[in-house]
Length: 232
Image 1: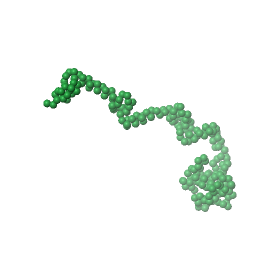
Image 2: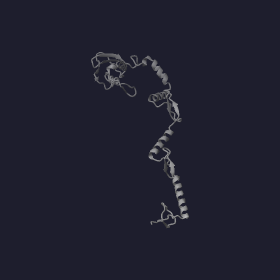
Image 3: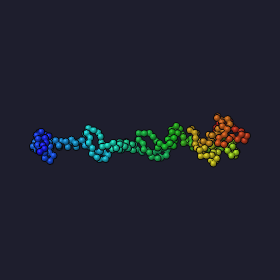
Image 4: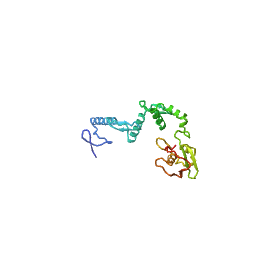
């Protein structure tokens, strides 16, 4: 009959039901102690994943709290969300609430128009009073009364003569004479329709004067042009 060797005392014995000891009481007690110790060690090295709740093996000295890279990414995402500022402020320009750290001195909601308003107000504390004065002054209205308005005389592509004062006001009053692309805003410091900058180059005496633009020409003989270089 086949024999086995006791893993405790080394004595040979006839195996019974996958036994690994010879059956001696001392060997059985030692083996039982070994099994219990192994189970305790394995249990001590088990942790529960913070995300999915699954148990995984990990040394007690390891700070790992997740069982897989996917759970680790989710744990990192949740931690990042928890660190976001929970304090809310109210925009001084539009009144909209926005999230921001209490220690941050931001007073606007980060929208472009609100940020621009805040910058102008900080640079000029009397900005609102200035804007009220501009709105009330006849010389600063966006029409023929504007202080920088000039007389213009232009020939349209179809030969029609247009004589007017203030180029940008004329473009606003006659949008049907121009395409959507020609009416797009252009310019950085004083934005206006692209047509106003292009037609301004037709005026005699301006820098980089051109003879025509998209069929528009200066109407010589119908107007005594002013030498001022403004496009209004």
